[in-house]
Image (tube, rainbow, N blue to C red; front, top):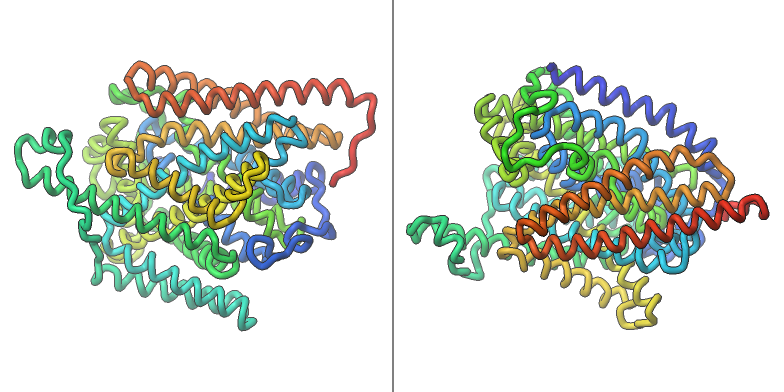
Length: 588
C-alpha cells in the first residue's frame, strides 16, 4: 500500500468535513451568533478570561489537545494493522471528535464559560455535577502523571531536544510581552520565535544535555534480577531511574508556575508558536511521504497477533484515545478555550478545525510508524518492534520519532537534526497539554471547593499545589516513574468515556432546544457502548493478573460511569415526559 494514497484520502476527508459538515452543524444545529457576548468579554479579568484573536486561540487549543496521545495511540494501534487505525482516525475525527470539540466549546460559551462538568448539573441533574467532576479529576490525574513520564523518557532518550524545548519557553515569554504590552503585531514575533526555535534545534545536536542523577538511587531487586548479577548494568538502570525522577520533579515545578501565570504571558504565545511548529511538522512529514513514498509494510488487518496482544475490537477505540475523539478535548474547550473566545462564530474554526489538526497528527503517526519507521529499521526490524504488545506500547514514541526522522531525511534534512526535531514536536505538545491540564485540574479542585464550601482549596495557589502534588505522587509512586505508562489503559478508557458523557450532555441540551440531535447522539451511543465494553474487558484482565492499582482505580471509574449513565437516562425520561407540556427554552 502506497503511503501517498492514505495521505491523500485522509487529507481530502478532513478538508471536506470542515467545508461541508462543520458548516452544516454551525448553521443548522448549533446556530452560531456572531453578536453573542462571549464570556471572554463578559468576565474579562486579564488572567483566565481574555478575548483572543482566533488564530492565537486556535494555536492554544490545537497544541493543548495535540499532545503525545494522538501520536502514542495510533503508534500502538497499528499492531492490529493499518486499516482499523486509519478508518477510526479519519471517520472518527470528522463525525465524532470534531463534533464533540466544536459542541463542548459552543455549549460552554453559551453558559458563561462553565466547564462541561458544571453544566452536567443544570442539564443532567443535581448529582451529575459532582460525579462528572470526580471523573474529570481522575482523568486529569492520569493525563498529568502519564505525560510527565512520557516527557521525562523523551528527554532521556533525546538529550539534544532539551535546549530547544526549554529555550522555546523563554522565547514565548518575550513574544507574549511584545504582543500584549507593546502592541506589536502577532505574526512577525511568532514567525521570529519559530525561526529561533529551529536555530535551537540545530544547536541541540551540538549541546545535548543529560540530567545528572542527583538522587543516587540504588538498584531495585527487579533491576538486580534483570541484570543477571552484573552490578554495572543494575547501577546504570538505577541511574536512569534517578534521572527520570529528576525530570518529573522539574516538569511539575514548571507546570505549577505555568498554570498560575496569566494566559497571555506564556500559554497563548507559546501555543501560537507551537501551532506554527506543528503545521511545519505536518508539512515536512507530508512532503517526506510524497518524495520518498515509502510503502506501508504493516498488514491491513493483522491476523497473526502476538500472544500478549488483545483483539482490536473494541480496544482500538480506547487505544487511539486522541486523534479520533477525546474527552480531554472537551475539558480544554470548556475549561480554557471558551474563556478566551472573542466571537461565538470563531468556535467552528477553533473547535472543529482544531480537532481536524489533531486527526492530521494521528494520521501522520500512522504513516510514520507503518512506513517511515519500517524504512529506518527494515521490514524484519519493524516486525520485531511490533513482536509483542508490551514492546509496541513502550516503543511507540521511538517508532514515531525515528519514522519522522527518515521522512524528513528524504527531503534533505540530516537525520540527526530530523530526530531532534521530531522529539521536540512530541515534547512541546505533551508539555503544552501538561500545563493546560494542570490549570484545568486547578479549576476542578476549586469547583469541588465551592461544592463542599471549602474556601481554602478555592484559592488558585492552593488548588494548583494540590493538583501538582497529587499528580507527582502518582507519577513517582509507580516504580520511580518507570511504571507510569501502566496507567495508559485506564487513561484511554476514561478519556473516551468522558467524551461519550460530554456528548450526552450536549445531546440533552440540543433536545431541550428542539433541535436535531442525531449529530451528537449517534457518536455518543457508539462511544459509550465501545467504552463500557472495553472497560469490562480491562477490569477482568486487571483482576485476573493481580494488577491491584489498575483494578481499583478502574473499578471506581466504572461505578462513576454507571451512575452517570443512570442519571442521563433519568434526564431523558424527564425530557420526554415534559417536552409536549412546555415550550422549548430560549438559548441562554
